[in-house]
Image 1 (cartoon, rainbow, N blue to C red):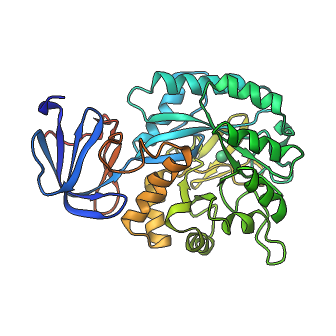
Image 2 (cartoon, rainbow, N blue to C red):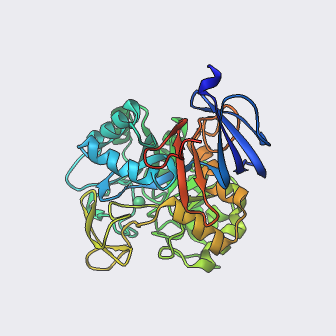
Image 3 (cartoon, helix red, strand yellow):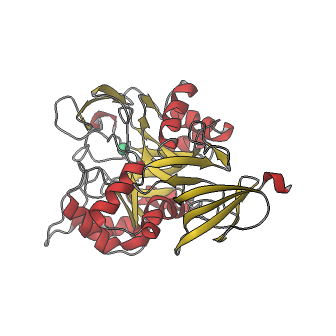
Length: 393
Ligand SMILES: [Zn+2]
């Protein structure tokens, strides 16, 4: 790698997994972080950032779409539009979330996500793989999902999905109380696919059995599951008390009351909480009608609901807004905020050695933010995102 390929960002506040480096520098070479430190560094082309924050690129484990488009589409251009929308909000890697559809098989949709991830998304974030939100869910807690699309855990069907995904299937949300669910969770864990608890009416003991079988993550904690009760602690009690389990929170001011978010944060701490968007096509768009798969969604004042207003239907959140909300609601410092938005989701996906922190050797995914924590620039795999590149310095 010649020194001409070395870019050194200077005059910035670099947020590493352990500290904020004021007057920091970060060198990027060959698409990777080459060096992180203080001062002006050496070699290469210098780019002063006027004291701005530099954070690792955000990683979203739960997102359906954005910018008017669905991430799971037979039209790859539509999927890329949704991906690029989130990239412009700082998300440099994501899992595409698929909902169960009554009209058919998820296998061809998984194949679409797999293709997108393999071919790479030009000018888009890394599409790490797919998250299945269904079909092995409880009809008692469908949220906005269509319960007629749910089915009982079925190892043969799971095998067909794993095959169709060709490695792209990385997370499956499961209701652990369904017959066969614990065995299915064991199979997922054995294949290195994250089993997440969610859309469930499980009691405490059922949730414990699922964790014992290998479930290590929770899909949008508090939403689509029974509330915590001091004599029936349920899923919420079982996952909060187990240090092996990470939990998603949708910090959009709609899904979770700030006090509940603070309570979860005080229990989960900096290593187990993961901020996600659960965003759908209406994110970043005017109020109106949108879809998640086959589900109709009405967006009003930024709130996404089923047309009968019965349930919240995804969100219009982006991770840069989640960052600002987390600072305000949870009072997080920037080091912890970067863990919740990048380090923890990378670890949940098993890609912590590649992404999720500003450290030498990792993929150069980063976000440059102003004092008000709005996005100024985004770099994905060492390349500035078009329209969000700094002026040549
Ligand atoms: Zn979702």
